[in-house]
Amino acid sequence: MTDIEANKDMIDKIINIKQKLGNQLVILTHHYQRKEIVDLGDHRGDSFGLSQRAAQDENAKYIVFCGVHFMAESAAILAKDHQTVQIPDMDAGCWMADMADSYLVEKAWNEVTAIVGKNSVTPLVYMNSDAFIKAHCGKNNGAVCTSSNAPKAFEWAFKQREKIFFFPDEHLGRNTGNNLGIPSNEMIVWDPEKPLGGNTEQDIKKAKVFLWKGYCLVHTRFTTHEIDNMRKNFPDAKIVVHPECTQEVVRASDAVGSTSFIVNYVDEAPKGSTIIIGTEINLIKRLVTEYPDKKILPLKDSLCPNMYKINLNNLLSCLENIGKENIVTIDEAIKKDAFTALENMLNL
Ligand code: 13P
Ligand code: SF4
Image (cartoon, rainbow, N blue to C red; front, side, top):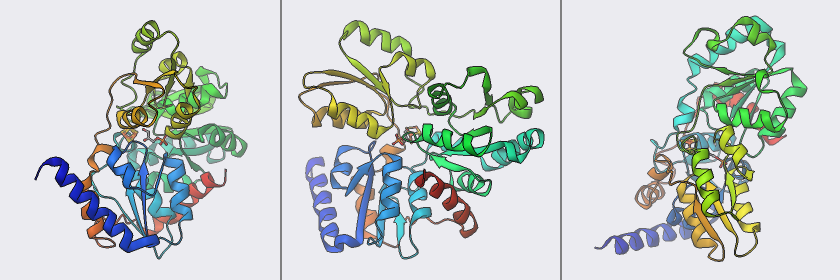
């Protein structure tokens, strides 16, 4: 069998299972999934939109999440008791989420609050984190946020208390702080490998935002040098990037936002326009085929290998074992506090 025939065979089987299960099954696909997976999904979106969907789709008994583990885990935290959440590949993790180790987060939190007091800091955690970190935030009256609601979450957090501890993406945290006009000397980086995160007690007392030293390898690869080159070659182009990029790249771009923001930006751009995008390559490749009337180029080819782990083969296997294999489970005690943090985000 050729690859094309093998793929067609798998696609037919997946469609067949979907038809049999009807509205008992919902397949959620993140924007970074490859085209053939997105085409088979029921809803595509950014991590905020998909978490909203997971919280809404009460009819579905089975939620199959085509994305990375923290996204499926968030869906499982929001799911009702009668629902199961499955992910086609349990090893589809996220490097950035792995940079906030639960032991180090607790240690950092204890160090900061010993200096400024618990009533001075709101913990805010990016969706790209494991359930334990989300539970830590829920327990300490904090919230989850995503790239589409980070400014709102910062404003909410500052209404609760005067400082924010933001995990684990230094860049999303700094870009959000910049956007809200927080002076750069009031945002300090917390390096978990150093005593007091590499700061003095004085720095900690003065700071408004603590930025955990985590980053996305897919997005920090983009440079201002590439932007300069693109501007030279395509002077009329607009450049849009994801907020996990560095502040230098964000400042050199025309627009910044979540994956759904980028999709809408392309959708709303006038026919014939040139748009250069700094985010994961599979989303850009799909936009190229979906908008043939616009010239869409990647700032650079940057692929998330974890998102790419989901394929037709493991999606089919997941559906053939619906409700049985690759089920995402969470310890009940952690689930309760993590739910609080996610609910605080959904209520924003
Ligand atoms: P979005 O929330 O914008 O979909 O981003 C998720 C992500 O992992 C980006 O790297
Ligand atoms: Fe994680 Fe970066 Fe991949 Fe997003 S693109 S899932 S942040 S590694």
